[in-house]
Length: 174
Image: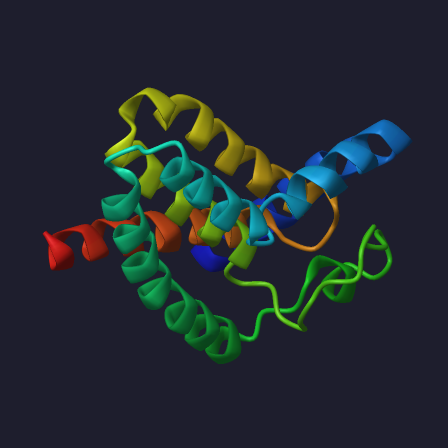
C-alpha cells in the first residue's frame, strides 16, 4: 500500500512538472541546461582552475576522480538491476518525452547523480561556490523531469547517489 502511494505521488508529481514544459522556451532551457551535465563542462571547469593557478584545483580533481569512480559503477549497477521503465514507457497514454534518453531505464538519474557529485566536490573545495553549484545541480534534476525522461524519485535517487559518493570518496582520500 505504501509503495503504491509512493508510486502515485511520483507519477502525479511527474505529470505536474512535465506539464510545465510544453512551451518552446521551457523545452530549450531544460534541454540546454541538461546538456551542461553531460560531462565536458566538468573537465573545462577543472582545467580552468588549473590554468588560473588555484591551489585547490588538484585536490578537487582527485576528489572528482574518486567520486566518479564510485558513482559510475554504482549508477550502472542500480540502473540495470532495478530496471525501472522511463516515464514515456510507463505513462504512454499521457506523455511523449521531449528527447530520446541515452538508455532504457530510469532509476537513478545519471545526469542528476553526476551533477551532485560535481556540486558536492566543488562545494568542499570552493565553499563560496556551494550555493550556485547546488542550485545548478538541482536544476539539472528538474530539467530531466521536464524533458520527460525521469520521474521525481529517479532524480531524488540521483541526488542521494551523487552526494553519497562524494562524501565516501572524501573520507577515503583524506
